Length: 55
Image (cartoon, rainbow, N blue to C red; front, side):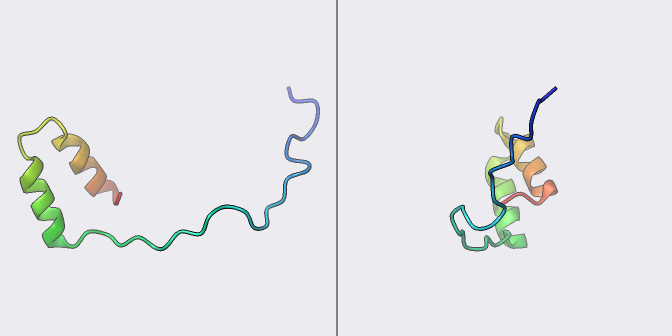
């Protein structure tokens, strides 16, 4: 067990680096990506990423 709160002196305000919004692939881009990796060892991982909405 933790004896005291380790977040006691942390603030939830500010901090971090602002990042611009990322855009999802278009249908055409996704199709091209699938065509390019078909038959390669990374195919499953690419399909999983596309299915999960990863960018």
